[in-house]
Image 1 (spheres, rainbow, N blue to C red):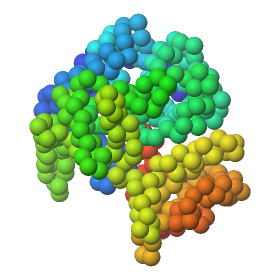
Image 2: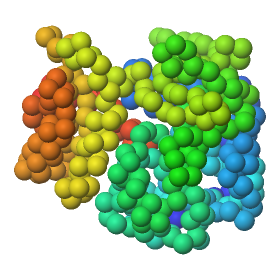
Image 3: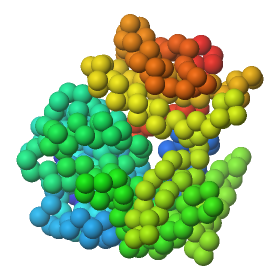
Amino acid sequence: MEAHLLSLDDSIWSHTAPPAGHSGGTDECHFQTSGSEGTPKWVVHTRESLRINARAVNAHFSITAADHWLLALPLNHVGGFSILVRAQESGSKVTQLVGKWNARDFAAFEGATLASLVPAQVFDLVAQKLRAPKSMRAVLVGGGALSPEVEKAARELGWPLFKTYGMTETGSQVSTQRPGGDEMAVLPIWSLETDSEAVLTIRGPALAKGYLVQKGSEWHFEPLSAQNGLRTRDRVLITKDGFLRFLGREAGTVKILGELVALAPIQAQIDALRLELGLHQGHAVVIDLPDERKEARLALAVAGMSASDADKLLARLNAGLRAFEQIERPTSLPEIPRNELGKPQFEVLRRLITQGK
């Protein structure tokens, strides 16, 4: 990876240009959703909504011109681009690591005080036992669930992690992990409420304007109501003192023989077992597949892992799973299809497994 100090003038907004075939407004910022489930669409923000979120994050972490961001996320996604906006608002520096992700290059960079990573990148740092640079004071982790075992190992290596919760529609963060616990402090720009099923609705000035969806050759704008807010697919607990605890995602729960099964805890078990067994090479992802008899069944997709290692991982995994969750055998693929943020593309993955490719 090559390191480049970025200019933070108004040219940064070119990374939020509208999709081909749509002109967009002069103040609009466009981000394609990650598309791990369902059809991708574009989230439409304004520059001001992104600035509002950036200022709230800067205030929460006391980010100033003395700080230096190390950027290892793509700029066409809100997780990476939000770093530029925070830096522009605070006057801090940004060094971008360009090229294929390399954990050793990231850990070897000296002088940066802040960074933002996804769980897969944290796993790579832990797997290679890479210690944090002494200058690093906060590493924000978002975009997926981080297993407790990986989190613990990273902290032992000196990485100052703060798990975050947010989404493209909120322009990045909604809440940030409190030191020493899993509960998250909600940024003051947000108003949160849950329904009887604990599903979260978010309101606030940093919320996106709406969605841009292509239907045939035409673009259609689907607005988000500021009054109604955004009903997410996430289940959370809001404590009496106003903190947030993430419980799970509706889209990450399936039914097998009438029993509800959450996939995120199983993936966390996989990551923990890989560390315990020393299986640092390759990738392993749990996924649900349709099943006529059971409604759904679970599969383990692996890439870059030997058959013996995959079998060893599966045996240990099944030993901790309930009877209806058991996975028959691992499916080996040349690679796990992922988006630019490293999230598995589940629809593509299901197709590869069911087609036997």
